[in-house]
Length: 568
Image (cartoon, rainbow, N blue to C red):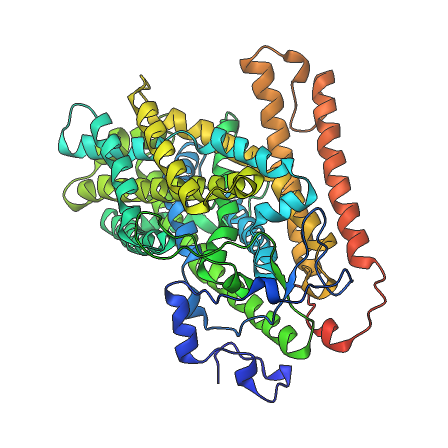
């Protein structure tokens, strides 16, 4: 029996729902099943099928059979790699060192919040095969462009490559970290030329780097004896709402955004699961390297839909269990382990420090250590930062190439793999230029990108929830538990984004009219306008999702009802 099989499904032929061992193993690379799209029947405009909005019709196909969790691990490993060198290595250890364990509540809440956000970003792709950007474009063609620009502001600075180079140069006694930073950017570029399916290179590299990072972090905590700090964990975990005086709001919002991957990075989850072949993404095609002589695969503009037959609904439930387990066991558990053990080291050796980022580790923590501990700190930092920069390059290039292709390139006859390669080349060269500029502290680049990442999460979380409840049929919509979690996510990031935007404009740009106070009262007149906008967006999101969940679709089917659950 398949380990994810639910006996309550009452299925007579388990093979109709779950993939065989041979079929499931195909997902360990990436899975693609080409179909003659032009010969397929179009899905009707009916309540049982996704709402096509501004896009073309969906083609009808059955949902693929469900593989084991162990066969589809990959997308969340890349997301974990994107996280270990950002919030989990720099922001949260610094926040805990400066403000104590009373801030730990924000970390674990941030991680669980991103679990729901990331899996909701996957929902449209698993149901239709389309990327989340295509879903945004079906609402309005400007939404993907907005996120492209916001993504560049947040990730267009090679702070993690610069940080890794700073650590490596410090460890080896190099006078200048910039040549190493440039070398790391070039290494990432060259690695993409190793496989026809470019996703496979990234997944394989991230698996190795993530395992090394986690083992190194755990070893560091054991060697330094900082595990005794775990006694403070329970009190910090329940100190919800505590924010020590003097906490740097930009760093805090960056930590919230990077309690996980954050910002533009999270949106890549949709493209990674499409490349892997999750659900209807199995029919969409993979992005291949145009420089390696294999035939390209078409990336269909309009996705697919499946009829709500009993078999397809059982497969949907199976896929959804697998998706949640893969993300929870890889992403959530991995983050909680690696970040927490690094926080213990920072809390033990850098308590009360005013030094931030990499400098805290190299100038405050390392001088107090000797032997293995002193070696492990720069080693863990270097691997974690390089792992994150690798994932950031992958995320930015893949997201941006997809947006450019759908917004203009497809109509202009451009090739998506070529757009990817050109974007990769341009981003690499841009990163090298930024590294050569006279920035003395790479942490400055990280704070800029992290704060913007937190701000951009607010609109796309709200938009994703509205799409998943208003554009998907009821049997594919999120359950009420997930909807409440997404309401929380929009409020969480919307509140801190509004607070940060108002204060930044008032303090750094002299627009005092926009000053915002945490309790709303006491804000400047323009600050009240910002708070009103935040509340309006939150109210709109709640009202639209409630309307979608409670609308009468004239469909009364026990099998469809069984596909809907509290955390469906």
